[in-house]
Image (cartoon, rainbow over the protein chains, first blue to last red):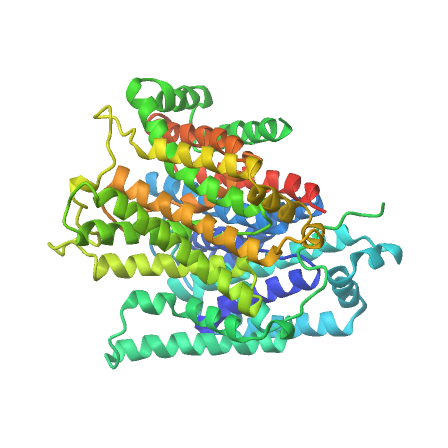
Length: 277
Length: 327
């Protein structure tokens, strides 16, 4: 269950910290896909442990591109969608070119249970403490609530948002690594299959609180795991594609049931920072 | 104008970089792409055929974004439109009504799929960004289920539907080329939309809602209702696009029916400045690119998915412009 939830947890932490700084990152799905490919390419060459680092680096690089657009004042939803397309495109090009040269390994070395699962919980707790208890966390949250006030106090919202997104890129990278090195054991085109979007929904459902996000993610992981078990046991003849849609339907249902005034969220979420006029 | 210059710079720059990265010759690849898009009558027809789904999705996204509705769900709306069109064309006895009925079903299905997001937003305040993305994933899973289950071909060997009866196919005037009637339908839709946006009170209100929702509200426009309606209209356009692509090109349903037309529609609409005329021009550019990418793949070994990377980069770059115009 924790193994199923781990990639989502890492991705949700990344999305959470970005959103607390006022940046909605839809592009997470694309960045995660790029990280998956990096992990799969690196693992046979440098081993699965260093492949985590390679995936994190790839995540940093890709998310930095998104961060640059955001800091330049891009509409975040639109730029994020572009990142999803670019992620699909760039991984498709690299993977097919490697395949054409016979360089794409079908199965790559993977990792034992442990670091990536427990690390996800630790990362979530650490980010929670960082946001709630430290000065840096205060500045980050202020950028999500009222960036103009940060600027008035002598800070620079664009710099903070850029730094947060670069850091989040590393977390997204680890999410991709967890998917490949603890799950599939290979790269498949489009393998993130909406997990990045799901992380987005989980942050919303957890109302930007780390422990609530963790709880939601673990519940979703448990539900998915249970379904697969039931199917394996033949207890329930649920078609595979219905299972595939289940987490998304579940999320939509919960979103529909949570009353809108309970949602809230960072006040400046999704709003480009314009600077002083 | 800056928008087009930027986009062309991104397209050329990214394409050259990709060709160099896979060890090809950019000049050769460029000539091959030109040949694939414009080199012969057949190539021109291929470009025209590739424009069609991009134009439908581009129009769907443009009208929504213009009204400040962030419909990221054209992809799912297109897929359910194609599913509904397939089911209708297979279920009805073939006849002159086959194509119109299938198109109608596709449009209605797309509208209904977007309608779910509209209802969620109206009742529970769920942002359409998230709901339409999630509905895309559900639609894709639904398509997989359909072609493995109820809509699977009678032979049962592949996860695809039977071909729809030829009575439902959209006419191809110049075979063996793939240019089909759907292009005319899409252009007509673009024309109608342009008229409606520019010449009707509804169009004026829509633009007001997109530009200044608070002012529109003060002026008596029912903003939430207008935006819900636009979302449904947007879904209908994307659903029609799915139906048209099915009846005009593929004639049957399969899992990879859409290589991301709905997302490409965002690139098309942004480059088109969210106006029907500009969107048509942008669809022509991206359609030529799609047709050219086939030639490039054969000549220079550049995978055709490179188109997605280029479109994505165009969207990221143009997003800066969108963000700056608003607020």
